[in-house]
Every structure is written in C-alpha cells, then in structure tokens.
Amino acid sequence: MATSIIQCISHSPTKLNTETPKHEPTSLAPSILSLIPKCTSLREIKQIQAYTIKTHLHNPTVLTKLINFCTSSPTSASMDHAHLMFDQIPQPDIVLFNTMARGYARFDDPLRAILLLSQVLCSGLLPDDYTFSSLLKACARLKALQEGKQLHCLAVKLGASRNMYVCPTLINMYTACNDMDAARRVFDKINEPSVVTYNAIITSYARNSRPNEALALFRELQESGLKPTDVTMLVALSSCALLGALDLGRWIHEYVKKNGFDQYVKVNTALIDMYAKCGSLDDAVSVFRDMPRRDTQAWSAMIVAYATHGHGLQAISMLEEMKKAEVQPDEITFLGILYACSHNGLVEEGYEFFHSMTDEYGIVPSIKHYGCMVDLLGRAGRLDEAYRFIDKLPIKPTPILWRTLLSSCSSHCSVEMGKQVIQRIFELDDSHGGDYVILSNLCARYDRWDDVNYLKKMMVDKGAMKVPGCSSIEVNNVVHEFFSGDGVHSTSTVLHHALDELVKELKLAGYVPDTSLVFYADIEDEEKEIVLRYHSEKLAIAYGLLNTPPGTTIRVVKNLRVCVDCHNAAKFISLIFGRQIILRDIQRFHHFKDGKCSCGDYW
DNA sequence: CTAGGGTTAG
Image (cartoon, rainbow, N blue to C red):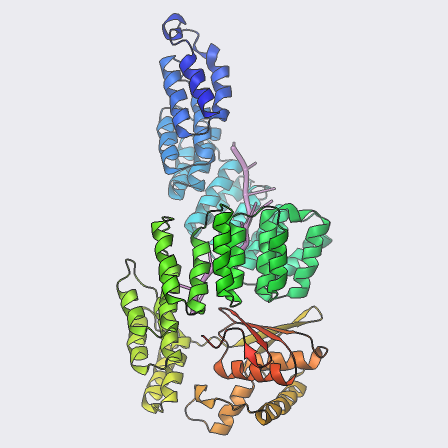
C-alpha cells in the first residue's frame, strides 16, 4: 500500500503543474482526497501535501483531510504537522477545530486541546457535542477539574450535557479528577442512560475501589433491558476481582460464553485476572490455554497471576514462551517478572531481567520497577544494598519505596536500619500510621519500649491514621466483611465463641500466639492475646469453617498484609481441619495446605 | 471529527 501511493504520486505527470490551468485547481482534488485514507505514514501524507502544493491543489478541503489523518492516531510528529497545516487555514470551521482537539486530547498535549476552546469562542463558533467530548477527554487526562467543570457548565448552557456522547465523557472526566460524587450526579440526571453511560459509571465505581456499588449498577443495567457490551463484561469482571467474588465471577464467565464475548481478547484477559485474584489459578490457566489469540496484556496477566500465587519459575517460563510466540513484553510484563523474582528469592535473575528490560527492550524503568528491585534486595536481607539502590535512583523516591524497605527491615529484624529508613519516610510523609506500627512492633520485639512509646506518642501527635484490618469471605454469594476486633457483626457472639474454641484446639496442636506483634505496649499479655485472636483474618477463616461444608476450600481476602500470627494460625487450621485456605492479602496469595503455605514463609 | 475499557511495586 505504501509504495502504491508513492508511485501514484511520482508517476503522475508533473507536467500537469504547468499544463493544467491554475484557474481550475480543484478538478484533481477528488482523486487526491481518495488517496489520503490509504496512507500509512506521516511521510506519505507529507508527499501528498508537497504534490498538492506543486499542483496548486492545496486548498482547505485537502488540508482538512490531511489534518484528519494526522490526528486520528496521533504522534507528536504528526500533531506538529497537523498544527502547521491548521495554521494555514484562514477560517477553520468547528469540524476542523474538533479534529484538532481530538488529536491533542488523544496524544500530544491535552492542555492545547483545552486552549482551543477560547480560539473556538473567539472565532464566533459554537462548540458542539464533538468539541465537548474531545475537550472533556483532555481534562480527564490532565486531571483538570476546574476546566472540566467550566466545560460542564458551558455544555449545560448549550444543552449538550445530556448528549449521548458527552455524558460518558463527563462521567469519565469527574472520575479521573477523583470527584466520584459529581460523576454520580451526572449519571443520575440522565433519564435513559445508554449502555456506554452505564459502563462509564460502573467503571467509575470499580476504579474507586467500590466494587459492590459497581456490581449493583451492573445488575440495574441488566434489569433495565439494555444489552451489556464487552466493556460491561470487563468492568464487571474487574469488580469481582476487587471483591474476590469467585461465584459471581464464574456466573459472569458463563454469561460471557453464552453471549459470545469470549471472542474478545480483553474480556479473556479480564477473566484471567478475575480468576487469579479470586484465588483460582487453575481457572485462570484454563482460560489462558483456551484463548485462540493472545496479546501482550493477556500474557502479562498470566505472568502476574503465576507470580502472585507464588509460582515464580512458572512466571519466568511464561516469558520464554511469550518470546517464542513473538509477542513483545512490555513494562507490565517485566513488572510481573521482577515481582516473581523478588517473591522467590531470585536475586541474580532479578538483576538480569531488570537489565535486559532496559538494554534489550528499551523500556524505561518506572518507580514500580524500582520498587520491585528494592523488594528483591530487601526480602533477601540485602538491606544495605537496597538502601544504596534507592539513594542512587535517577528519580525522586516516593515514601512507598522507602516503606518497601521498612517492611524488609522488619522481617529481617534490623532495628537500626529500620530507624534510618523511617527517617527518610518522615522527610516525605509522616501521616502513614502503618509505618509507626511496623517499626514499633519491631522495637517491641527487642523490648525497646522507649522507642515504642516515642513512636506511639509521635503517631498520636501527627494524627497519623492506621487503616483498620478488614477481611472478607464469600459464602453463598454473599460477601461477609470482618474488621479486626469486630464486635458488631450479627453473628459476632457465636463467632467469637467459636474462635475461642478454635484457638484452644490450635494450641493443643502446638500453636503459640505471637503477642510480640501487638502494637499496644501498655496492656497485659493476656489482653494482647485477645486482640490478636480477633484479628480480621482469623474471624473470616472461623466464619468460613462454621458456614461451609467440611473439606471446602476457604477463600479469604484481606486489605492489608497478613500478620505473622494469623499466617501461622492458618497453617495449623489447614492441618487440623483438613481445609485448604487461600488467603489473598494486599500483595499476594497464600495457599495453606497440610500445615504449609505456598509462600514458603519468604515474605 | 464523536463516548465507555482488561494486566501495574509496597
């Protein structure tokens, strides 16, 4: 195709230039216009443009078509060129403005897209639905809430705010700017939302980690009689993944198959992720195996799935398979690989992959890749090396990066390094309650009560908040949530009693509660044990034991890292009750079976 | 010239 266009131009009789009278310049335009959509590169566009200049066919119609090409899948070069051409047009109409705005919004410079609005208004033109959807998209990319609101007001004035194309972009803009309530208000004002509008609001809830509300709207969408689309499936599945709702996820999988959505690569990728995050690696693998075609994202999802379930070597062999299948790994693929290395103690391999990522694939490491490297070194106990690694980074470290190292100091019992690291964290952010708790628990282990009390006081002074531990379990399609020390759940008395009995049995089998972890220094050991006993993950597991048939796998999701004592207790429970327990915490999966955990206690 | 989108360290 590329050559045919170039040939077409170069074989055109250039004499035409002189022979064709200047007063009839548009006669050749139609054939030129039909050539433009066939172009495959900016170079061809420039050739056509050069040709039209030579032949005096260089008019606004041709320019508009050329600009349209440049902005449809824009790069910075093509946008520069589009801009140049745009400036040559004396009185651009609204369509042309919209075309430019689309290009800026999609790629080059969302700020310029927004600036176009004043140009539109100065030209005496009225923005239409196209204008609003492009500009709102730009605001979403820039997280420019103020500008977004102004556009919203203007759209209301011009009666465009309920337009079927404007409405989803409005919701999307507010979501991107973290104004969930405004997004909801837009949705509520619509009399008959389209599927796309539903998809936008469902996505909004899923992105804000409110999967229950997302799924409620998914049900509302189905009841409204609208037909869900592939995008609906994607967001519904990602909500299930957030919740760890395996039964609902399976139901959606059936729906996907029945309605032919399983032909979409992205839907299958969402299924892989859902199954992996709901603790069923086997189902994730089987979806992956059945896929007729797999793109980078599908491979990455599978690699991340293996890695988070503790199968680091499988994850790495997937990368080899991926290369054989000639699918390019991207930054997320390598994130999964580095994650796999760090969770499996593969330090040298981790370094190798990190280097091949930059050298062979030209991927610029992001803060997340550096995070994996810090974790890789820290988990392996190479704390000094990790510290120096952070200090030498070409980018400014985030508190999270130091926090990663702090966790390693805790698991490798280095109080000194821990104190040094927390100083670095406090320079950036001293409002994160978890940091105080980690270091304080570490100090308590070594009976350094002065440090413990100092940290406690400082935490109160700074008003730093601890995130309460929360674990959930799905039983008969209902997700039950438990908070640490929970006394308000409807079955709490029965449950607490059962938990007391459970702990007695565990103790007989050799379980010893590890009270050194309890943050409060000034309470008695007996009291500490009770605090420990009602940790959310123990409550959820006990609930599962009580309310599911013997032998069933217990699947629990926790919002923080699992605590050492609960991890230990879960091992005993899996042994004594012959139950598999699959516990998802904030960073990985723990499969407990026959008294052992899949993480190999490497965390 | 139009909308909504899966995989992402701790």
